[in-house]
Length: 433
Image (tube, rainbow, N blue to C red; front, side):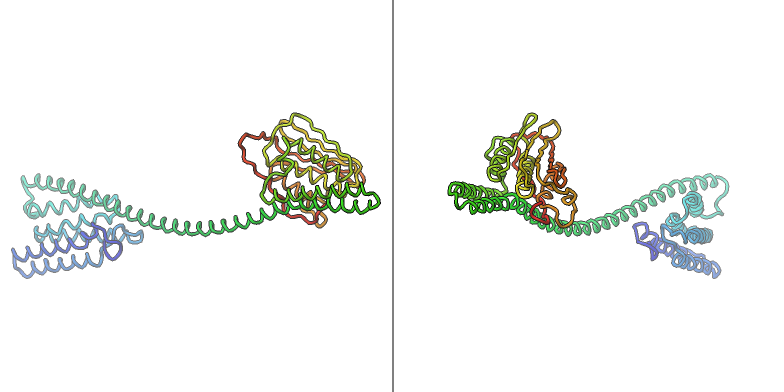
């Protein structure tokens, strides 16, 4: 509109049309006279004051709160100057419309009376001055006031409304541009976070694979090598008995082949060999127990309760690895004479119990967060079970044997369900209990 704010379409009218109207009115007045010194001095003097008033007192629309009083003073002075010039010469009616252009700067409650006052001044110009307002002209004069007020009011208020809509659109565009800028910044930030997440995901994948391989090595190669060493040491003790020495060597050879096959399956992330070969989990555990008893020399009893149902591969792998780890710990540490495996099927859970009558130990040393001395195998059991929604409970005491209870949800296996190996546990502290 002016130097105080952004110039809109109505702002351009406010800037230039008043000076055009004032100059045109002054030119007509000078052309038609009268040519007295006093008259011309008043005309040119008031015109100059009006021009200066517009230039230096004008207030932008919408006026800021601290300039609202100045806006009222500006419009009041402007209408007084317009009225004085119209009274001097009705031809200044071409300048009189200026009051309508600046009504918007007034408070809303002052706009209707301001339009009516400006309409009265314009009607005075249209009847040729107040000297002509008498007799029948009075009715015409009043009618002109009403017509001017209505027409000017409609045009003025519509112009104000359109100007407000234009300003709102400009603000909306600015807000949209700011929102787009923030969106770009957010997208750039999200892109950076996405890249970080990808990096972390890759690192997590590498760590998970390392943990899986560590668990598989512990469950297959390490236990197989332990069994091989045990059989070879037993063969050395029976140098005088070729038959027993040959039997121990044959067991060591068989364990080596099985360990090699398990190592290959672990690399390929497949199910354990006994689970692949057995019809279901109970049979795989029974085969495992027979093989373990043959190599360890410890009698083991396998019992299945409930109705066996196929489980998702991940759950069966976890239970099989738990049985495998439990038996391996019995052979290495329990010095037991008997062991037992019980697989119980219920509607809610499937429970595997691994029991022995051996030396026992302190379970507190193998809990989560235990310091040095915690078992890698038991920690791996607990983490594997937790990752499939299962639990591990250990009951033991020095000299009283050990009972390990592993439970998983009894989720039926759906045909066509993907064979997903159970996630391996994280690294432990030691190799065994």
